[in-house]
Image (cartoon, rainbow, N blue to C red; front, side, top):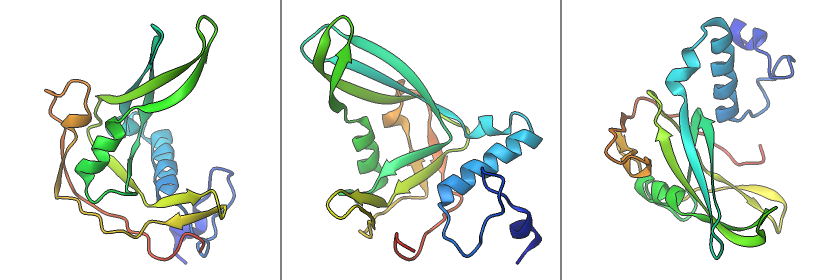
Length: 178
């Protein structure tokens, strides 16, 4: 076992077990957090911002809030390529909203990227939780991505240049239960 593995500790400050499967996105987030402690400001090159806009379907309700991200997740289920996944990101979520002024009402929540990171980290969401079996299931369907990704359709300001070149891939092999 390498010196790195022997000295690496998780968020709980306990040594990790290299024989237990770890989530690569969680590991990467922890690595960036640790780098930020040693090189202040380094995480800003990976950080973007999403605007969530909630709109009432039958009432004049509108609210915006913002979320920063380091890892941009894309749906894979029922998709074959990144452009399809970006279109799904743009679809509004429909839900029942509860507000002091309007009470309960149907609402739509739209999502757009308002600040693209300098370096984009994408996570393909290849696992789905099955409510019937109460287990995670790996999505093994065919999925393509090109050597460049145009994120402009997901940007609030679509004139903003948000084109990224692929420079690395982490691929999980095995099942979701290992």
